[in-house]
Image (cartoon, rainbow, N blue to C red; front, side, top):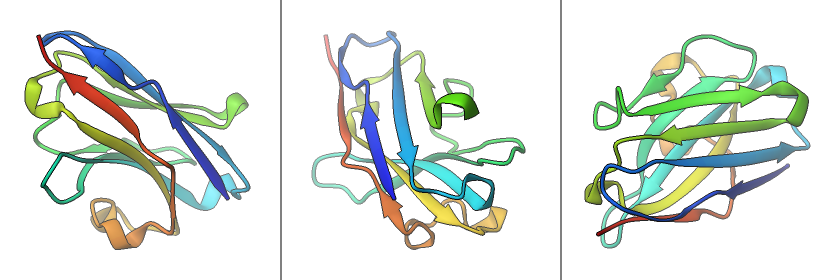
Length: 125
């Protein structure tokens, strides 16, 4: 299983970025895809997740209404559209894959067995 995250960069407050995570080696229908982030000196935290097979995404309260999880089955890729970015969104963003997760476990780091390498997002003027 390989997860390749990309799309990070430097953006001004209020700006937007779209992160991508290309997945390979998964039996997609059984997996949940998640986005997490880790700011300097802080623990890794949940951002958003959704089952590859469908269903409404789940979001952390801190990003609801600003971030949108989506996927393109034809490209085996999931996305995180980030709008109205704030300086506190600055972090390394990771995508992850977990098999046969129940919804209540979407936010748990240890529910995910596969992780991408991370992409840096910096929100600063």
